[in-house]
Length: 499
Image 1 (cartoon, rainbow, N blue to C red):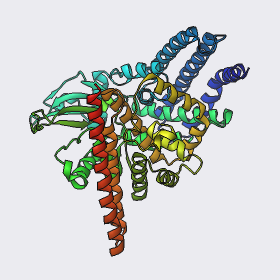
Image 2 (image 1 turned 180 degrees about the vertical axis):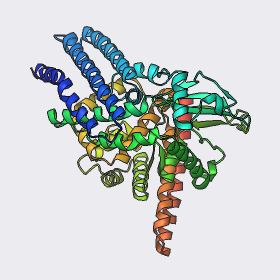
Image 3 (image 1 turned 180 degrees about the horizontal axis):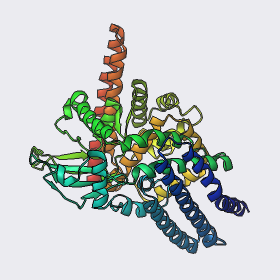
Image 4 (image 1 turned 135 degrees about the vertical axis):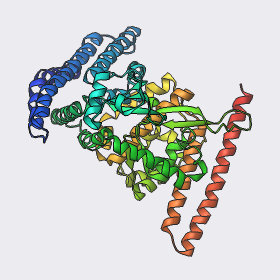
């Protein structure tokens, strides 16, 4: 009965949505500071996009309600039908993302990394399309962007310019070119429609989120509006991206000299631990299409004779800075998570805004583990296996605690929300590479976060007694890390012996 009542509410919302949302979005556009021509484009684009959103949402909701009606819970037939509905719905959502483009494609990309929250059919559909099959701007449109920004077409600016892009993403595409002095370069060209659609998308999301919150008060994602308003203009400004890229490299040379040789990025997993806990300047969009692994250009080899790897970071449009206090508390939290320190987990979660009532949920979202596993002292307590049973368990918890999750996301500072997004991206990449996660990954996180905490305390404590206290903590840390390393070796030995 409750399900049917919810469906009737959905139906009313879907029927009324076009008129209601179009009016609100048009009002938002009408008050914008854009020129009349741009405002006219927006007044045309927003209703169309809202209509697509409404029709797709209603179609998906009806498909689930109608197809699963009357089927016994836990039956083979319901599992089979649910798989088919998941697949159809994922394809409808995929089509919507491609039609709307822009931030909708970014949404689809992130959805493909949430394997712990959404059904596998959605994850696979989005991964197969959103990362490497994004819409491409024509060469005429590329020339239009060049004329608008630089006053000339590509052939006048470059000695050579390949009109066919080597890659296309949600906001831009990349062409191979050669400068007049003979240097081979990659040229990133923004999609010509992005300025208009970005404003339309922002207005659309704002009205949808506010409307949903008024109908379903527990659905409070209004923080998303502020985040889009702040981050999207920065992602569309390639001068900001260039500065971010330069600052990223400078941070590694200055703050992480032990891995400065890896100019583009050091070894997998360590790069983002260094960014979060030491630099406080974090690349927040590290999905699979923005990472390239290649042999180290210097040709250096390991003791086994293999070429050393180098991780190349692409797309520097979305970065976030962590102030000293946030960086210190976040590093201290991850240190506590790695070493199963329940009191420190609570203390630092509360400092980061989770509150005393939701700190355990915050820890669970960060690690994708239930509380009893988080505080388990075994060395592999945070390792994600990636099997169906574990995935189903996570999705069940996500559904069960949805109101609490929404409240937590409302509370947390936006910078921490972006750290959660970054964690999702890295977890997805790690899962693809390792079919889950490894103990080594958490050893690296534990080592870098712990060292960052010690370094921060050295800066804070100036007295002799304070410095001695930090020195003692540093010695104890080295002992704990050594113990963890020995436990890792024993774990590998046991696995090798048991086949």
